[in-house]
Image (cartoon, rainbow, N blue to C red; front, side, top):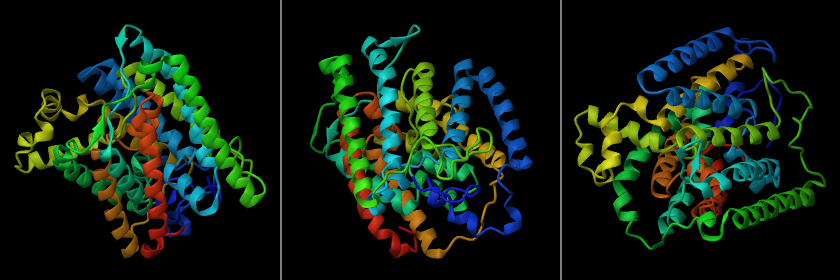
Length: 417
């Protein structure tokens, strides 16, 4: 993953470091290692108050999951662990460090997930994987999501941590993401009627050992292909064990990609342990959008998507009882804290018009694609593959094709390739 000078925010949402900050006044940027106290104090207060409130009002697990979300935001920000920028760098420059780090992340998570999913319980709690059907909706939805990644400038987790870290453009993408999610859930009944095979879990089909061996082999093949492409183009490959300039700080960042990979693996393992299911992001966006419309008088409860009893209960319940919502808020708070600790919290309020159009269009695609593809880069790609679901691999392939198309469209909106 490309890294520019330390002390810059993530651009386009994730990975690399952000052009948005380059537009900010020089005086508003602090030297690396100088803490910006305001965001840190604000984030710290929210963390303490939020954890206490959720533990008291819901359950201790909800408070703990909020803290897991906070940790995820810090990991994503400090490691600049972007899915969007990693894939774009491989497509445009044949730089494969980001993708290799993702394969490490998946391998470590599968090592922990597969035995637990085979047993079906952990510490007395029932656990389940993120397993979904394999069909047309996944192919189309993932492609649309991939296209939206490059126009919107981020994926699901990237949009959250970049918005929390001070990116105004990504806040626009997030709002459009929520709107696209609502539009997508309106069309879910149609996509559920398109051709598809039943959900396939490799752990259930062939056992944890065989599924793990096959998955690790696939991760190795993808990583080796990325490494070969990079070496063929550049002669040498970027390291994932260190930052580009060799400097890193646990407190201030940046972190090397390997730290991001291992950190995100730990986040998903902790989520499975506490929530009984893997990490997800985008279902909360559909919930937030639907609740907003309901508050405006729209009878969203009558929509087919919200008719099943479990979904109807989620729509009626408070947002604080929704695990995904609580973790998403935690990601933004964690990114805010990390931006303050890094001395990089410097929102730029002026966003070029073409870039703003791309953010809105990309956000709508992200939301729509995630809803019809059974998830995003976290829920379908990361958690799907870590759950041994075949749909996760199909999502990965189709979304990567969408990223290729999106990368080629970026110049039309004045976005760097």
